[in-house]
Image 1 (cartoon, rainbow, N blue to C red):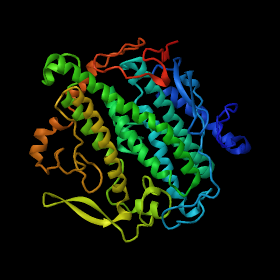
Image 2: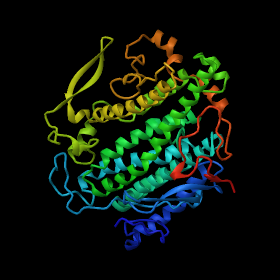
Image 3: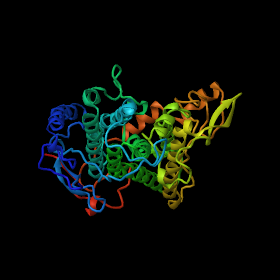
Image 4: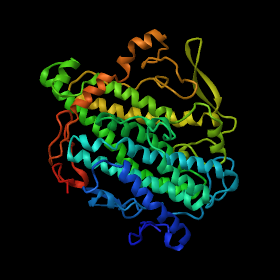
Length: 475
């Protein structure tokens, strides 16, 4: 069933009305979700009418419609890609068997953990971005922020549906806990470190949506291979929505660079102080923000060697990115993969069993994908005649998880002394002065077609609307 029923209290394409117990449980969770949204969702947005896209189908050719919607009245719902009763598991020890429609008892705890961890990231990013609407650089950008926020809320619903439907009382308790943890909370923080970091300004937001939402793309792609069919179908549709989040990040940084390059050319200078004085973000600051968000994000993939990753793969719970396009045996026993370690102050590669290195495999896929986008950012600078290039730091730089945790490494991949790290950290990672400077630029601009001085307008508007369209109506 691909069309979505909007006549129900909870829009869905899973025949929710046929399971009254489940429907009642989810309708009981719904007011708690709205309370959470009111408490820690986008600040001051309750009465805004925003030009949002809403899923109306899961058919890739025409899945969404656009229109002005009051943020609080957005129809969050439950949407799964169409099922295939003949779908087979195509990796791990169960390869060739029929995909599971219910949770096998022996995999219950691991599947629940996977779903809860994914579910926890969705409300976390809404909480991290709560204040950004107050400093939006344009109405166009404000609308994009709100679109991401409502879709992260929708992705929370996607995971909560799976918990309620397939995990009984445990699932209901986990669904409640997803609304009780809070990003950065000292006593009850979000599960993953990156989702407890602050997103203090729009440069951080664009880096977050480029890098951290890209982690989402790779994690969801790995789960879309799952032998547990409802999870695979859910995450496949989430990926359709996730693509816009990465677009916001990539195009946002491109527009920052475009404006900075324009100022550098007008002033005929690459002096960061002069660029800053002209109200643009200097390129060394952009590079430091990139170094931070990239290193925090690659930690999200977990330890470079993990018995959990091996178990998840062999059990069929979580595959690799684009599993179906790979030409190996999809079982991986006896295969190896190179990971990094530091020995006697030197960075060395060593071969380990591939099953144990699957976090590293996914991390390396992410790195390749990330570098392609940074290459596109550099094209913006190249086109403007600016010789500086942004660089992705070494994967051992600023790591807090796995074998590389706590190693003092320069962005270009040298193991450095504690003294050099302390002396040069301010060159490599954002400083309090950087945050204060970027914050000083964050004045709110919401007149249609007007943009803050530190960012260029986009090439085109949303859904073929003009750039100066009234994307947000402030009621």
